[in-house]
Length: 484
Ligand code: GDP
Image 1 (cartoon, rainbow, N blue to C red):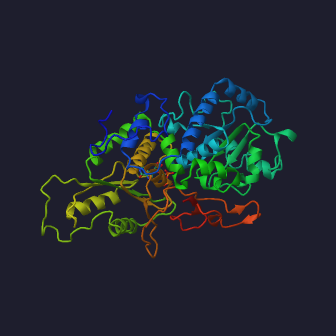
Image 2 (tube, rainbow, N blue to C red):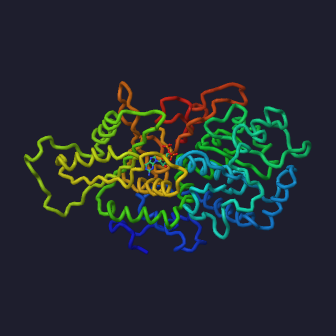
């Protein structure tokens, strides 16, 4: 179906260079086949090794997916109340935490962890994300089935204080990192608490020495709101594999998100309707994402200045002529406008920008159309319709030619990664009103990365250990890490 393609774009490789498996039925998930025609051409191709790995992962998932014989065997082990070493099918179950952006960056990290450890990724899908994504693996499902024996995944048993958490089992000496199933009676599963508030014991997860222990558990439950991928690149046992999978380090999220995150048809309708109505006809698309964090409020005028200063100084948008009607120049029609897509919970930034180009001509003579799909006023992650708009807007932003994002926002990270874009990052205004800066890599930032070095037994600067893991450009605290 080519009717959704922008008339400017030639038909693009539907399976994204072999990233996507051909084993699906197209109408059941249109976004899988249509997204590529909206994205700016990417000069990042997935490595043949990654493609091979994804195909073998798909085979593993099909063999071990819900209600297969091997899955049933692993369930029997779970019911037996103890772990006795790895089985033929081992799992990591993703548990949600935070807004949609936080959830998606942790999901991608968990998938990478699954691939590296030959585990099957299953999702405990929250009600408010129900049916929002297509199944990514052919002939099976990634959703934890409703008859899964553990029902209390969203209770205190699967949060930081749970006695069953890896951190607490370590603290209470029920397990230790050198231990394995041959000389110990291990619990039936392990809960990994890896959200921003993980304590020092939970964070022992990131020690290389801890990883062999996890292999003794067929069932891991992992809750995170972080992009913990950079820490996997700091564990030497994964080095060779990661190097082969991602010779270009900054493409981890880019490839894995395009592989995994396909909006379901109901969400895709929002994306394509909006694109066709407001963005398709533009000669250039600029995305501007304005995120104000409720726990760190910023004055509207200050943030507006930060956004406008960035777009004008970096020539992302043209300046305006000051005299209102004097020297009126028209192009006489036929010239395509530039489209600016603003996303924000508030409507003020969009209104100011729109009025600016309505009330004044641009110095380049360009017509500038400014659009905002929704203004939800506040975050309501428990509401599916709200999340649908959030996902649609992440995708719409990812279709930009140039992207401007807000520092620290995982919502922006998803858009930049999907789009393969290095965004201009608008920093929080302070006394100095720092100018925006362009990201040096399109990867998300691991905000609360552990500084503890397990070998040294003390905190170190993790941004200087290997050349491709450095501190993030968008944080004013220095422990965040990202891949370059
Ligand atoms: P972060 O808090 O910026 O890191 O991003 P998250 O996505 O984790 O959480 C913010 C949530 O607020 C989003 O998931 C949306 O539910 C909502 N939200 C924030 N900004 C926008 C926006 O520009 N558009 C829409 N539709 N929702 C937004």
